[in-house]
Figure 1 (cartoon, rainbow, N blue to C red):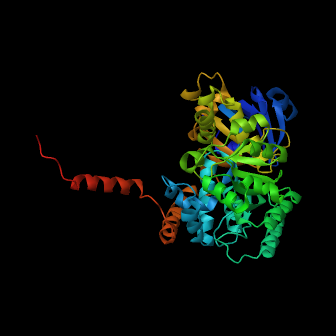
Figure 2 (figure 1 turned 30 degrees about the horizontal axis):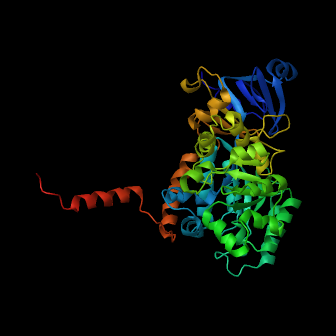
Figure 3 (figure 1 turned 120 degrees about the vertical axis):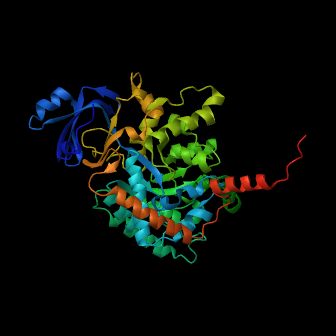
Length: 476
């Protein structure tokens, strides 16, 4: 059976009765939720909620699971025009691809790129994305407007680099003033949550790293920094400071609960303890590791040590179910096979860190990521009456390994229906895709992007041409 039509899901107050509710302690049956004013007003047994809220008509959703929306703890929203440009490329592509691409954006194209990425994220089941800060030469409010217009929650980073080649002559005092203003600018907004960012530790002076960290801590915000992602970055830090990147952040006083360390793939045992003892959080980005990384973050070890972490896409693909599958799969390949660990955290670990754990990592743990009274009503309706999940024996594992984006019937953010069967309900997603496709092609063609490899189609054509022109041995 299908879920109710969107009209029955658009009221300000809703009593929703799914087949299964994914509560913090796990899947429960015969439970319902009351959504009102953008939050969960009540969560509990269906009979009790119907009795206590008799004025609300129950919206029954046979075959549907109600679960928290996913949190993407690491994204680059204004890089969506060039996603496939990174395919097959060596690591550290930000210098050759992403910085040039973002530098070619103007305000309109930056808005379109960010909204396109937000649309993909919503379609994939994400209700919150953490943007690590755009390098586009525009007011970051273009990204804020794009995500708010799309209807997704955004932790919006402002890049505060004062020590990298892309920002020569940057005035540290001006950067810190801008950081302070950014944190205050979105204090009263519903869906935009300000954050600060430094691209990599070497891109910020010691004073800027320390001060940005303090400003974020005082504002209950996070500082997003790419940390220990690639071998080249680790070695540059060792040459420059005699310390690895994470060690250097600790040395300058920038390591603490306000830090959201993106990637953190190349960690020593001592650095794992630094993360644990400092309370810093990590964005574990398994698809990015597979596509362009040097290693896989030791997420199962982080879970056992109590290190805070969420799951991030790094802008690779906005598909939450494929992300949790990759999170478990990467741990199995990188660590589980060699140690005989057949479960690698089990299904619930990856669902928890993709939702509540991710919300905590981006500084929104008190707001979202859970189906609980008082939490923001950021949630999904997922069709579980499908061949892949019937009969059902272990729903958390099944969601991690078998569920797909096309099973997401509806996406709610702040209590409002935002997506129905893959498309927005209150704005034209198809029209955006057409506009973004045109703007994206124009932007990429004028950007000074440098690729090491040809596209796969060009490479194949060259190989075919070479094979056809090569001399053939005489027939025998």
